[in-house]
Length: 265
Image 1: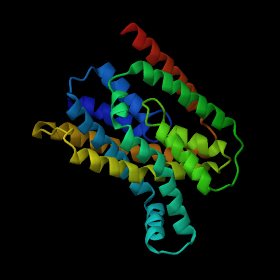
Image 2: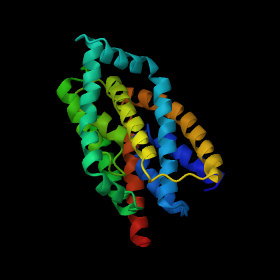
Image 3: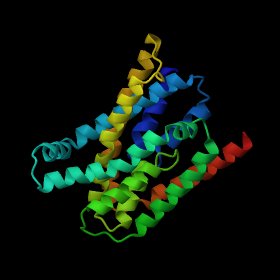
Image 4: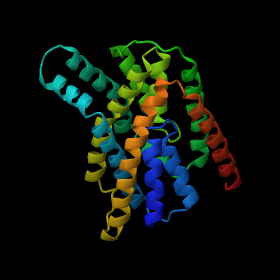
């Protein structure tokens, strides 16, 4: 992989991890359009590095909230911090179960299936459009809502379903405050990303060559910086109820991806 391709993928990951347009779907489309000749193991390594970069962006931006979660886990008191930590754990359960028991099926979805990505982007667009029409409230995330949002996160493992788009839309449609919906969405994924990274790094599916260091480093830096900007931008956009513009984008890219898949099928 060239440095230029690493920059392109880093920008795509940094933007689409936080903006509700599906980072996994865009990475599949980018690799297909760029016609990368990476073998699956090296491609997975780049994916892991890029996700690590955006996870670090989340940690930097939400460092205070993450500290509250850790305090809640180790204070052993049933206070607001502990309740919030339990909600985060509840939201993780569906995705963890899917990752443990459907790993092979999930991997098959990422083998350049552009048509699937296109269809799922249309689903993402619909969710965003509906959420944009929902009324804003000051309601907080409850325990049952946390589990339902977690189910959306599990479904968003499919490439083309935006994780942030699905979780934020679900939360907003459940009547939860838009700002709280966005923050909960970004916080709930951090433990999952680091857990998935640890799992992948311990597997035999990751291939590393010293020649890959420069593209990996560049991709990480670009994704990290872009992620910092995109995360703050996304929170501001959710507050202003401007999700419809992303829904239009998903509709456009989804239809384009489906046409591309048919033409090149």
